[in-house]
Structures are given as structure tokens and as C-alpha cells.
Length: 468
Ligand code: S2G
Ligand code: ZN
Image 1 (tube, protein in one colour):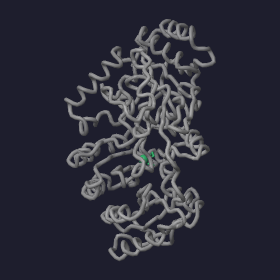
Image 2: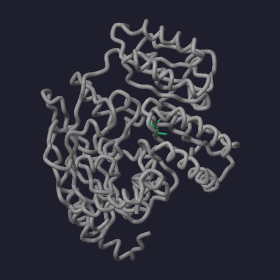
Image 3: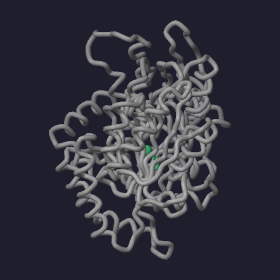
Image 4: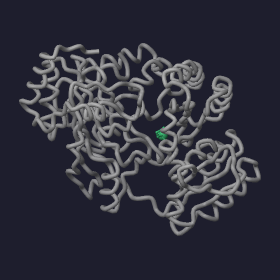
């Protein structure tokens, strides 16, 4: 905790006001609370203040000032993160990019768009659609997450099986490094064999190397008339068999799963069951289906999976609206369970290891969490499983976190045996930092520290996140 005297605080704020307009340097309690946290609720926000720069030059002035005064900075996007990476609880200055939210340039020949870091993800998706193209990285928080934060966490979401992660669509980055240098990385080039690709260090850096201020992103053609199938699956072991068959015949754009327990929480909020029967698990598969050319194939595959006993029921969308309704069953899970303050795990393994890991972890969780409601869901087609333990209403959050935390080493040891990662897409931040060693060994973390030292020698960039 950074302890400052009131005169030191006053002096820092006066210094900041020399180049940040008073309206864009907030110290009120509500701003400090709202901008000092992400979607996690485990930490008490306590920033020095919230700065909202309007230009790259102001961001650069902030970083230079912060180096001079050894003032820690926490970059802030949409604050939809789930690992505490955007939390400011030690007198840091939050640097919000929300005012820098414009789309700056579109090139129809490159099929690329350059936008400021504070651009809302959905605004970029809509802009691409209006140009007859698509920015295909997609997830439920699209309406409030920002492009800069998506890049800083290498956001994945629901279409990774076809389109990959944010990293795969970043062709240029403008950043202010922790030293205060302005770098213009890769500048939208497809090919550039001129040495280390520093752009990719900033993707997934969680604000620890500098501040992303602008991005050039590749666009692609839109999906043509996607259809959505939801399948009722009696047990976990059949899911990847279904995936293997569907992906061999259909042009899949998504392959998700969720448990009946997760579905029940969504149904409480309004949507209808996909079909009458209830099964322990469900698969949602989306595939490109212009003119219904793949519908017969999909129905044949459905019959084959049913004959194998891998599935018990299913539905295929008959319209775009029904496809959207079916997607809600998956995409609304996170919001539907938020009130239960879930203890979240976001793990990844190679897809070849998913069946073995599922079997091992299912048994572990049943043994270790006999009294808790455990929800499975996630992007199983790319090996990313979200396991959410719901907090019993009468249990103190601290006690619940301790009980769940006690199981995590067993979970992560099993994951390590399967070569997995303790964080698939939500990042490390604060919540997963104690477990980083299950995925990155000491010699590797020392390289991460050396890179951090090169970009942020005074350690002002989001200190305490990712690793110490
Ligand atoms: C998902 C969203 C965040 C959460 O639904 O795929 O990544 O609540 C999650 O886990
Ligand atoms: Zn996810």
C-alpha cells in the first residue's frame, strides 16, 4: 500500500493538473470506486485519482510525469476483466482510455481499420458490418469492453475455433511504453521480417509494459447465414466425439458447451429451454450455412451422434432470430450467475487433452466441493473450460474464497499434468498470480521480468499484476 501524506497527494494532483484539464482528473469517491475496479469484487479500490486523457500526447505526458514521481499507473479500458488486472487499490493513478474512442481510418483495400484504444468492441463490430465486413472476435461483454483492453488481455470469446484470438487480428499498435516512449509497431503490415515483433509483447501484457493508445485491426468477410444447433448431451465424454465429427463435415464458427445447472440460471431470466428434455450437458455449435446447403449434412450428423449415444436431443435454428435465442442460452450464463459471486476458473488445455482433463477434474470437483454448486461452461472447441463455483447465499465471501482457493492447487496440479494453462482468456491479474508457476516455470518468469525491466524500468506500469 502506497502511504502518502496529504501534502504529497496534493502536490501530485497539482502536478497532474498542469496538463490534464480538471474535468478529466477525477478524485470523487464514485469515480475512484467505478474506475478503480473491474468485474472482480475481491479488492477495495483506492486509487489516487482517475485521469481521462484525450490524446496520445496527454497519455505520454502522464507516463513521463509518473516516471518522474514514481507514481504507479493502472491503465483502464472497459473494466470487464475477471482477474483484477484493472484494479487500483494502492494509491495508483487510473488512466482511463474511454475518451479516446474514435475510429480513425478504414482502408477498403487493406480491409483494415485503425481505432483509438477506448473504442467499444461492439462499435468496431458495427463499423465493420457497415463496410460489409466483420471484426470477428466476439464475446458477451462486447457492449462495454474496449479494444485496448481486449488487446491487453488477448481476449478470446465464442468464435476462436474459426477466427482465433485478438492477437490474430492486430496488425498495428501505437503504444506509450512504461519509459514514456511512443512506439508505432508494425503499422498494419501483413509481412514485416525486421526483427522481434514487439506488437505481440503488448498483446496480453495486462498494462504492465505500457499503455496501448491506438490499434490497427484486420477485418474479414462476414459469416454467411450461420445456423446454430443446440444438442442435449448425457455425459461429458461424448462432447469431444461430437466435436470431432461436426468439425470434419461442417464449416464450424463456434463450438461451446454448458451444463444443465448453468442453463437453469439462464432460464430463470426469461429464455426458453431449447427442447423439452433436460440433459446434464449441452453443446452449442454454429456453422456457416448459406442457403441451408449444410442443413441435411447437419441432420445426418445429428442422427449418427444419436446412434452412438453421444447426444439425446437437439434443435437447429430455423431463422436468424432463433439462432440469436439459442446463443442467449450460452452467452447469458455469466450475467445470470453474477449475483452468486462465483469463484471462477478459466482453464485451457490442448483439445486432444480435453476428455482426459474433464474426467479428472469432474471427479476432483465432486470430491472437493460436495456442498457447492459447480457450473461448467465454455469454449470447449478450443480447449477453454470455465468452471464457476457459486457462493452459497449464507456463506461469508472471505470464507468461500478461502475454501475455493484451497482446492485450486489440486485443480492446477491436474491441469499442469495435462500441460494446460491456469488462464485461458481472462488473464492473470491479481486473482491467478499466486498460481502462475503451475503454467510458467521460474526461468520463464525471469524472462518476463527482464522484458518488463526493458519497457518499464521504474516499475510504474500496473505494479503487482501478473507477477512481482
Ligand atoms: C464466457 C465470460 C466471463 C465469465 O462466458 O465465456 O468468458 O463470466 C466468459 O466467465
Ligand atoms: Zn469465455
